[in-house]
Image: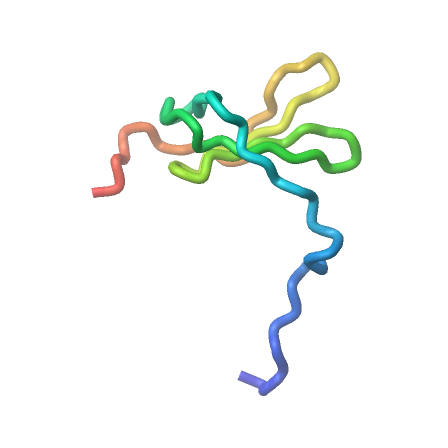
Length: 76
């Protein structure tokens, strides 16, 4: 290490506010109440804190997968 502190990529004050969506199920693992959503430049993004799945919505409301999760892997 060079002795300099790590600087976050985005200052915390500029991070988008991420909110959990009550009653929402993850499209990958189907776990309920584990999905959080936020907006970046007006584009909705969501991620599952349980399995790591992440996507965003396109102009027509369809999803664009950012991080897919291997549904066969149960973490064991």
